[in-house]
Each structure stands twice: as structure tokens, then as C-alpha cells.
Length: 193
Image 1 (tube, rainbow, N blue to C red):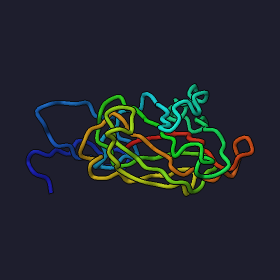
Image 2: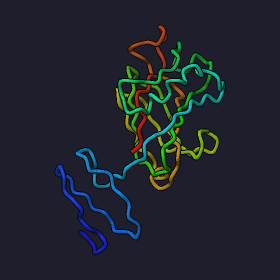
Image 3: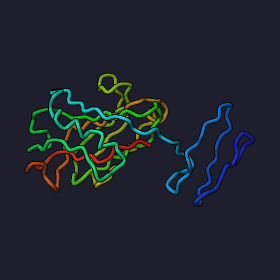
Image 4: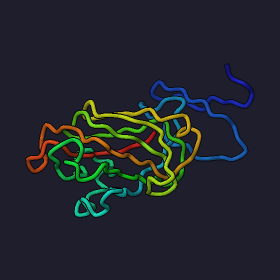
């Protein structure tokens, strides 16, 4: 049913989109075959920050490739160190990546593309800064293939936050070890929607 404040704006590639009229006019992105009628455009990620609360310098030499986790090219990746066990060989309790978006926006899902990892455990947080202090838990996941999508909590969909933080407390097992170590991360893309 359509009320008088709704209007049908266009039909392309078999997708019909309904937009509620408002006092402000915003430019909508083009409709693509993968869009759904309820999706809103999510601003692009702009930066990634590595967070290691127990040892802030651990893997600092890998920071030059952090933006490969958000560059839109699944052929490039940020690669962690390799570890002897899923618990980081007991060196630290977790590693996190804080992704900043162009604008604060509600999110419904987080998709992570990665290479050769299975299992592990991660938690997703919404935050106003690249820090776990004051961050709000909005989802959890584990790798079950090259692409994992986590539905985020209602709070993520209702509140605007400039950062999504993914914190790995248990590393995935790798089919292709890093420097002969069977646990680690190869993160190709982190995307919100």
C-alpha cells in the first residue's frame, strides 16, 4: 500500500524503489541489480586503524597495508603476523581493526572478505573513535568461507557511528600459513551495508 507521502520513482533492472518525500532533497545513488528496496547507501570507508590493546606496537610494521582492507579490491589484503595458536600464541588477547566511514551512518550488516581462514571468533563494535573504550557491541561472527556477513543489532541500525571495529579474540585456522604459522588474518575487504 502506498500513502499520499510515498511516490514510486523508478523501475530499473526489475527493482522497484519507493522513497518517502521529505522537506530536504538528497541525491540518491543509482539503483543496481544488487540493491534492495530497504537499503540505504552507506558512505565509503576512508581509513583503517590497527588496535592491539595488550601491545599497541604488535604488527605496527604491517600498518602500511591496512587500507588494502577497504580499497574495494578483493585481490589485495592486510595480512597479520602468523601465530602458532588461535589465541595469538598467548602474546596478546586480541587484535582489532577500526574502520572509519566518510559519514556517521546506521549499519545493518558487516561483510568481511578474507583469504584461506576458517573458524576463529570476532566481535563487531560501533564507536565514535578508533578505540574499544566506550564502543558498543553490535554483532559477532566466525569465518565459514571467503566471505562472512554478520547481521548487526538494532542499535547499529538506529544509531549513527563513524567507526565499525572488528575485534578478533580467536584467530582462524589458515589453509595457507603465514611464515609457516597456521593461524592469522588475511583481510581483503571490510564493508558495511
